[in-house]
Image (cartoon, rainbow, N blue to C red; front, side, top):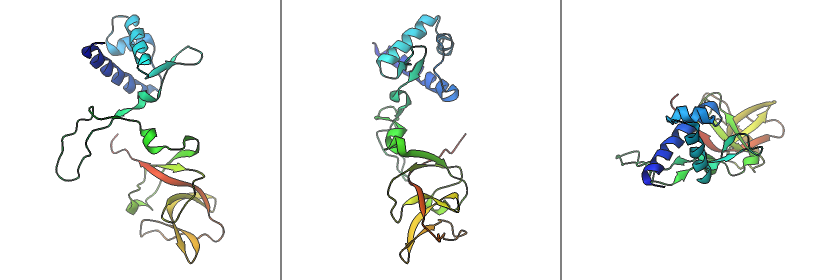
Length: 199
């Protein structure tokens, strides 16, 4: 494949990813032809075949539609880290590829994404509207951020110890430390955080 073909397919893949992010499905041949400006559905079929060979897509088990593979969700990872001080040049397409799940999720069957509501953890950098990555059945240690069950309600706090007993510590002076009277039930341990700033 010529470099110009590769560049075009990269552009087509980007358009397909944008479509999937909105519709949560791979479009029909006709719709792909319209999205890409192809003259025929044949060109759309050829594009899907090239993306299949490259490992971005595959046919569903009953062979009636296309579905994305892991590579479809990769994003460019810049080959330099950004400094919070002096500016650096960033070339996002020149680094390795980055799959968010590979970075945040180590145990898929035990991982839950939990939306945060409230401001009791703002001083720890966890804000209302964030989504925390929580791993169930992971042994919690003092200092871990955990989702605990208190009075039949879930709460996100730091696990601490006072006088040999577990407590739940907020990171906002406006909230009290929670000192459970009985056994403390831990739903899971927070291992990551997702935040969107716009849109």
